[in-house]
Image (cartoon, rainbow, N blue to C red; front, side):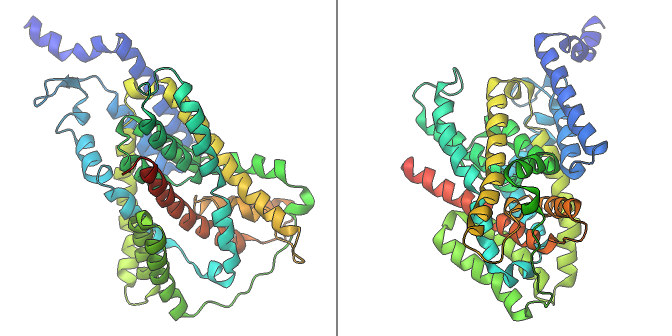
Length: 403
């Protein structure tokens, strides 16, 4: 009987050990994510599942029947979070499904009316490559971060950290999984999705620091006529072919995004389009969020590496935003019709959060200045830009590693 009680209450005893105290810290972190989701309404569809998954991943362990190790029941060999990770993230299925849903939500017609906005989607990826280079310098000097002399791991980890700057969770997961960074998946994914949720907090101060009120009040013309149906149908097909030829590693994500968009624009699959925008998006977001939270195990998450990844990820995000704004200001040196430089900040991938933030900032400066469509154009180009940048990083790093 005494042994039975010991087994039943072993979880309570475990919580007072050093490992248990670490788990309590993770519960606090999970609580903060859930608070931000519910109280502050910061991307609740992402942060709430991630926070709850974090709680599940740090519950007291039970003896796994297969391995004999003591791990939380949800993470054992047959634990449902482990099964979801292996079935959806380890094989890159969830990012692909998410992009099908996102593609079905995106209207590319504002971008097609002003194709020059595509350059902002490219300029706003500056932080990815700047952070990649900075990470290559910083990671090797952090004691115990990676094995001494393991330059391959440094380069792989640097590539995933850089992609955080695009505020594109699925692409970040895709890159991290491609380089098999499972031990770092928790902090990488949390950084990526947290910064997506914190776009309204992070972007405005950066934009205001780089622009004057006069620049933020610049008005931009917009043509109301809609693009032809033929153009909207051909666009996703052409983009898929071109991106697949130029950056083959981007094909899975670009292809799924464009496939979702083709479903939307073809006009004969309205039922599938609505399913992709609603049921598919909601279902995959739920399982993706809770699975990402399940990677936040205390032993791996409460490490100096996590703080470094979060700091470098924030650096990448800030420089992505700054890169877009500064590029717009540079163009204004040569243009007669000036561009509102805030538009450049929308070139990150956080769709549609960033475009809404920029539009609200413009209205705050001038209640009659409507730049939502222009910021949306830059935002959707940023969605494409981050995917292509992710494919370029994978290709570049793979070449440098000789594989």
